Image (cartoon, rainbow, N blue to C red; front, side):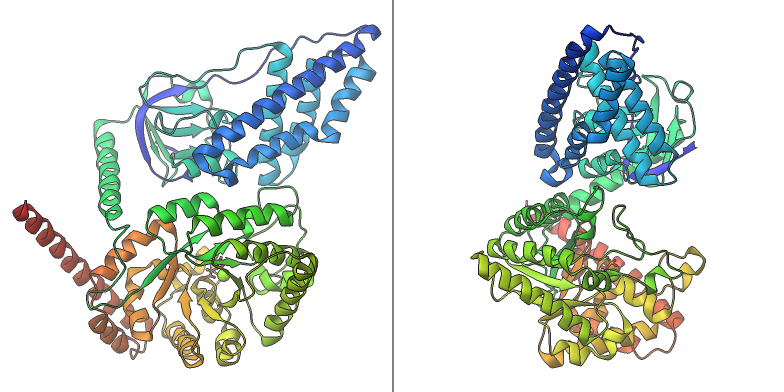
Length: 592
Ligand code: PEP
Ligand code: MG
């Protein structure tokens, strides 16, 4: 067993195909002065061909994984257009009289080494992109053949030293069971693409490729735990086969529920929407029966790039999301960076306590132009679907009003430019800071909806950093203090007559359903992967009984007592659910 980085979830078992390293032999030719023009022509021709190739890969990948995921190829085109990279190549040809391929290789090596030396994971990943682009250019200059992946029909586990996006794009998810790469981490473009394609990926292995595995050997990829097994014994294979079958069966069973209405046994409707951060995730969510989007985490769209996205770039994505949701509401949360979410090109101060620091709306209100650009993009998208705006981390009325001022300014600008938007667009806030709970009645008077961000609310109420593994056991959403905060928020929203939903991880935990039914929350937003599991719980729950139980749990005095009750409840509930399913399959057998 070898431990690596769990970069994309899932289990794969199959024969390995080891991809030969994509490296060229470049002869160190020197030129005569007269050849300079020819070398430049060859270089420009190579750049043109490479660009075409990348463009067509982008189109190809876009069809498989959606326009947003494929936009990473723009980064490769940007490298081919980068003045510093190009000047370095031209300089080597011009001043050192070297052939175009030699210049490309030297310039590529120079930038790759420079980026590799930086103590920054993101920049290291970018070094891989430069290498990929440099290799592509070299391939054209040398007229070398591309390394081809096996095209026979037997699915395989792909093993490579590194797998640049340009090679990953050619993979057919039907043929590639799993991927192992020696290099790369969770934030590499390739990891992002593998996750988008649903291919299990383990990367970051500290071994040599030729000693790891040979083509044809059996391997197991455990993308959930970052493990690989080369030549696994029969017990390991049968364990993972069983696991894979169980995962697939459970998935298939749940998929049957995607079109079923989410209603409790006694007729209480619980709307289930999705938390997404990309178009692709929306597509998965819609397949899983999501009723719109309760939280679009837009900050991920700002990451994995070199500069802030423009208004048009943002509008294009928001519009696609709004249109694909087919009239269901889309709640777009404005930029929520800071804490554990950084942008490489946007300098944030070094802080002792980043989660108590410069975060989310605080940053946006300080960078009004950046904020207004996002609001304009969201407003423009509101002409194409049911779009709502949501501000993160609001802790005072002043913040809510200041954000409203920027929004008004954006609306005035669009009016002046004659650009359409939904004039009745709803504006809500996340309730994730205790201060917001304490003044929830005041906030409810000045916004259209609340969404409870339990992830942050729990950490701030309990003073337990959500990232700190030493106190992870203290991070408890079922602490009486948290439950009281939830009750206060929901009561304030109900009193003010505004809708309240939950979009933190608690929404995807079946144990919390009785609390929502008791407190009067009928909208939950969660990861696309949790939707069908929670719908199954809703369908098997009687709201009246579950709500009455939760009312009793709310009276308990310690987390320990509450959790004990929740354990008893969930075990009994699962037993009833299994019984229901058995009965249902017996009845359908008889009917047939
Ligand atoms: C939350 O805090 O509950 C939430 C949904 O926001 P995030 O997890 O993105 O901070
Ligand atoms: Mg939050």
